[in-house]
Length: 288
Ligand code: PRT
Ligand code: ZN
Image (cartoon, rainbow, N blue to C red; front, side):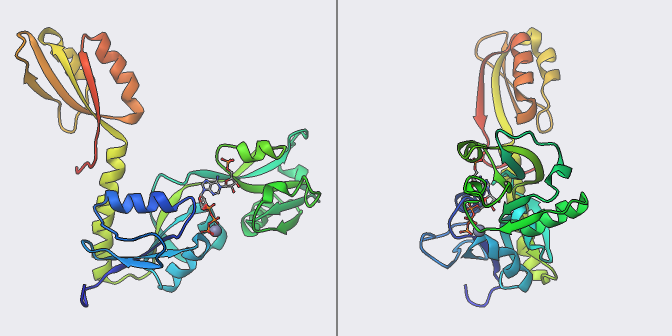
């Protein structure tokens, strides 16, 4: 790539955010070769260089300017408390940092943690949560397998990440209170120069198009002409739905875009209004 400016992005080397991070870049049309077993790689078709790092190190590397931007969980970002800007929520890596207590115990609120031993990998977040609630407890920082701590007598409760809740359940624990809801975000270092901001804007434009497309479906259906007006009124479309005559007299083909949150509701109304042969197609990119 010669001396052209490249934007350096840090993503997780392996683990829960790796696949989705690489997939996101791919969906943005950014080609990366040989991503496995590499520390860094430069894209051939977009001015970006990818660094593969441990997720815990990403906020620091971005703050220090070793990388310009990074993909990291809000949980790690909040714990590390580095001076970086969050530029976009990415919608994957969703989880929550929660207080979990033994299944057999009744949880009576934050105040009941007074004097208790809490095992966690998130000492700073736990400390500030307790301070906020004016509770004093003993924090045991452990780096992995936090969920076994109560079982081996190391702590009374834990604060750990939860997604399905299966891990807690298998260890005789239950989720008692959420401290932080988290997902992966794109962060950027402060004071990026103009050229890098221009590349970041280009990347963000693509990321938003991909995100938007994931939330939307392209819908095609056949509609009796005497019901067209009614059917069209149910459809938002990007501007308005597309109507094409069918060879079959008295019928039209109606095309539109529906957002996922309203999808089923609208489909039911369309059927009730006489729409037939409804096809639902995923959208790859959506540029508005
Ligand atoms: O090696 P490196 O340091 O990079 O990776 P890591 O082992 O520290 O992190 P990794 O890959 O486990 O997680 C990376 C990020 O994924 C986290 O920082 C979160 O932002 C996000 N994430 C999303 C999760 C989970 N979901 C999750 N369920 N991270 C961890 N878990 C663990 C949790 O700690 C518990 O052990 O999964 C278990 C619970 O899962 P359930 O489904 O049984 O509730
Ligand atoms: Zn980590």
